[in-house]
Every structure is written in C-alpha cells, then in structure tokens.
Image (cartoon, rainbow over all chains, first blue to last red):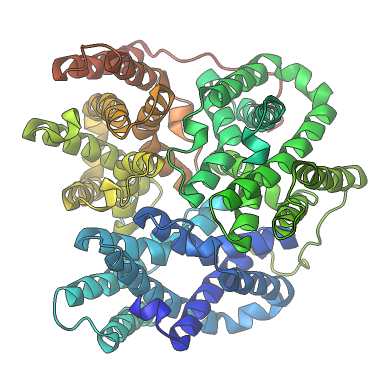
Length: 212
Length: 212
Length: 212
C-alpha cells in the first residue's frame, strides 16, 4: 500500500517495473517470430502476470493488472518498442538488465507489502512477494514453450526472497516505514546486480541423471 | 448476464461455443498422440479454460466451468468426437473454422457482459472479454508445449478486442440491449471471417533478431 | 475438512502427499538441469500446485499452499532430496510410484471433501478433486515444456475420478464418515496400483492424423 499507492513517485516506479518486464516479454516474442499482436500480448503477460497472480492469491478481484488501464498502456508501449526497435535492443542489453533488476526488487517488495495489507501472514507474504517478482517471467517463458529463465539464471530468486523476507521482518517491528521499505528494495536490487556482475550462479545437480 | 443466462437460445449458443473450442482441443490432443482421457481433458481445458479464467479474474468462485455439468458434458462429447472421428475432421475443417469464429465472437461478448455485470470497469471488461475468448486456446497450446496459435494466426485477437470494446461502449449508452449485443457478436464474427477468408495477418517483426 | 484437518494422522498423510509430488517435481527439475533453486521451486509447484488450484477454484484465498509454512518446508526438503540423492533415486523408483499413487488417492479425496465443505455442488466437487490430484503434475510438466504425463500415462485420471465420485456419492448418504472416506482413498489407491502393475493404458487414437 504505502509503496504502491501513496504517491506519484511510487506509481512512476510501478510503471517502470511493468514496462521493463513487458519489454522482456516483447523481446522474447520477437525472437519467436510472433506477429505484432502476439508481441503486445506477450508483453502484457510478462508485465502484468506477476501482479495478476499476486492478486488472485490474496483474493483481490479483479486484479489490478486487468483493471488499471495505465499499466496496460505501458505494456502496449513496451510491446511496440520491442517490435520496432529490436535490432537496437541488443546494444542496450546492459540497460535492460539493470532495469530488470530494479523491477525484480520493486515487485518482490510491493508484492509482500500488498499481501500484508490484505491480512496475510508471514509465510504467505514472502511467497506472494516472490511470485509477484518472478510470475511474469515464468508466464512469458511457459507460453512460448521454453524452460523459464528464472529457474536457471544466475541467482534470481534469492534477491526476491531476501527482499520479501526483509519486508516481513520489518512488519513485525516498529520500523515498517517508507524509508525502511525502500531499503528493502535497495538490498534486493544490490544483491541481484552483484549476481549479474559477478555471474554468480546457484549450484547445479551433478551430471549423472541426464536421460531427460 | 443478458446474453448468457436469459434464455434457452443463449444457453444453446454457449454450449456451441464450448463445444467448438473443446473440439479444437480434442483435435490437438489427437495430433499429440494423447490417450482417450488426455483427449477428453484437453478438450475440457480448451472448452472451459476461457470461462474459468474469466470467473477467477472477476472473483466468481467456483467458476461456472467447473460447476455446470452441462458444459462439462459438452466437452466430453467433443473429446469423444475428436477421438473417434478425427480422420473425417480434416474434411470439415472449413466448418470448424466457421464455428470457431462463432465461438470467438460469442465468448468475447459474453465475457465482457459478465464482467460488467460483476461491476468491472471498462478496462477490465474489455480485457476479461478478450481473455475469455482466447484463454481456452492459450491453455490448450501451452499444455501441449506449442506456441499458442492465437499469438500467431491471422488476426485473431483484433475481432475479440473489437467485440468486447463495442459491448463496453454500448454499456455507456442507453443502447445496452439484447439486439445491440447480438450486433456486437455479429461484428466480431464478421471481422474474424473476413480475416480468415482474405488470409489477413498482423505484421511480423523484421527478420534480424533470429537467435531464438 | 474431516480428512485434512481433524488430526495428526491426517496432517502426516497430507505432508506425505505433498512430499511425494514435490519429489517428482524435483526429479524432473534435476533431469532438466535446473540449478538448486530451480529444483526447489519446481518441487514446490508440483507439491503445492494442485492444492493452490483447488483453493483458487473454490474461492479460499490465500490458498493453503501459500500460507502453511509446513507444506512449503516439506517441498523444500523434497527438492533438496532430489538435488542431492538423485543418483540413488532410480533404485527407489518403485517406492516413488507407490507413494505417488498414495498422493493421488489422498489428494482427490481431500480435494472433493474440501470443495463440499465450501458448499460446492456434486459436479464441482468431483472436478475440483480431480484437479487437486493432477494439478501439481500438470504444472510441473507444463513449466519445463513437456506434454503432461498425466495426460499420457497408464490410467491416471480414472482412479482420481473414481475416488472423487465416491466421496460425492457418500456425501449424499448418511455414510459420509471418516472410515468411508478412508475407503474412498483406498479404492482410488488400489485402482491406481492395479493400473501400474498391469501396465493398463487408456486407448489411443488411431494412427492416421500424425501431422502434428
């Protein structure tokens, strides 16, 4: 609540998060040779999927992702950007990763805050926060039939888990304030960026059972 | 409401829509060599998926797709038809496309009407209507691991978007009446058939980023 | 209710069911070369997916799968087992199948009981029970991009359908008691084991339409 609805700065960051995830969906769609409508739809699923999942899990219907036209407008815009600018996109891959980390950090914190505001307990709030952050990327990849990147990439879930957990811990203390919540966003963002820069990966299973 | 619950003609058309989408699911399942139960289940997902998604989004639980045995019975019937008659199906492909267009038109309109009846705003009503129309096909394709046809086929989403938008516009005027709603169905149906007949496709991205 | 919340034996069996399904998710993830976090997440989806779907369909939010930390803890444990022990797993495949059959039987019955407790009609209760039993496996396979095994394996849906139907029939009689419900679990379990042992499969479509 505090973070997602209390001001125009928050709205701006919400829109940035949706935009960045939507852009990632649009780029995947372009690579899969979808037509322009497919690109826009996949942008929408990647950008809004996490939030829709969150709202279904906490029982807020209709989900904000299907009721706020600004969020959808941003997805359409991101889809059109991916469709028209995709040859340039590779040049700004670094920027996209930066923004993607920002989206991840913001969504896990905002998801947990919203779940707590709806009366969820600690476990639910953490789980819902993480799903908010990874849900859009999951849907994007499942729909085009590839194993979700969030299950394979360098530490992606851990920063979200950390951000959501810090929010829930803060909620149990007198320090559940806007600056502290921004701190949670920052910690998740920083951890994600460190993982990207150092190319940190979670360990993989030993190579023996490869009969896929 | 008006359209989906006010009479036996409406019920008949609802059942036709579900049957046609279920048939498409059954045929995909046959092509994927699923057994008879897999065929019936995929029929059910294709036929009922859009409506279940709609009801989850607007907060109507349990969704009508899992509570009305007639809708499920129709899906089982469609699955059995696909299973037993599939060699003949190729001959009636033209009929199936016609019925599919009818299903698309009916579902987008019925979805938006139901969302409005549950107090949804304009954006939600349009989005929910489109998802009702394309949701079953999306689930069908995602479950068997192919990129959803609705994201690739000649103009498929646009007729649904148009039908749902017309419903929402009508809702703002004094002309939110049964005949006008049938007009919305007709417009969506006509646009879809024009796209099929003329083989109209939405533009694709330029071929440069093919590194899938 | 009776079955899932009335005692520590029931809780134990609930946890076993979740553990077994989670283990199956973890093993699939290991085969797909996901990292340790991907393995744990896929374990969680396979173990909790059916219950989350059930709770969304009957309108209980947040779903117990995202609010009970014990269920999640069991999934994490199963994921770590799959990750570390997978070379031994092939030796205990027989045990896993046995437990999987137990999970299937328990989940279809528990799902239908919960749906009835939430006021669902007969059709809904059967459907929700079956989805509870097969939902986790469906999600597991869809996420890693393979055609769901539950749509292809030897009779998998039929035992669930039978178990759920027996629960609903019992609910209409004075014999809706704990021992009878355990009987339903046993019947579903027995039918599933017979299908496994005899390698019974549902019939497949004739091989003519293989143009996938």
